[in-house]
Length: 299
Image 1 (cartoon, helix red, strand yellow):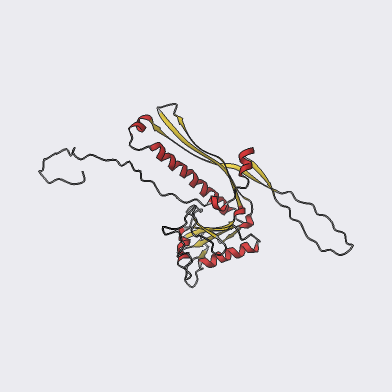
Image 2 (cartoon, helix red, strand yellow):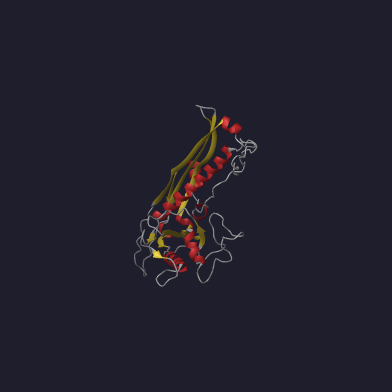
């Protein structure tokens, strides 16, 4: 009982007139947005789904150009047949059970609620797994954990817009196409970007009710040639105040979902339903030159 009684007050001493009420509404934890589906390609997923767990991707051969004068001999070059292998070698799973008696007498459908939670957990784990793999296999990494550039607005800090411009310059130098470029960073980075003098994100940043936070997308349009994405699933830094950002092109990495299923089976040892989920997938960085990673300091 929430309200205490006065000393010596003996009316309805057992407090049985005040029932305990259990709400039928479940408090759900907040879901992180997934960005992997927007920044990777699934060009080879169909081949894996139809034929097996491995796809061998032949790389386009590099053809050399040589100077030529009339009558000179042109020697043909040997073409390379280099390949990249995309393998489905990652798996995640969950399982829980709900006893028949618990299900019958509960005011909450725990099976449904927990299944929703488990499905989200699989997707969140997938997102973090792929982002970590992409970061560690980037062709260029600027700085290191504990020694990245300071993002801010003091005399020695780097404006976040300038950092993005540097990423764009490096991708330009590698002849990466402008279309389908993306940039992924943490909420702390975008807080700094909002504070720039240009206030580029003020009107269309996803913080308002009409924002475009879809799969972590934070801006309708692009800045510096990038589609902007926010994620808390980038690999964590081991040094305080350091964060990781990453940019690239959609062709840089490929993903393939081989098995994604949730099923209900009877527990052989008790009167209960066992709900279990399985996600089997593959991910591969195909073009390291189209992937740029950076360590930054955010005070």
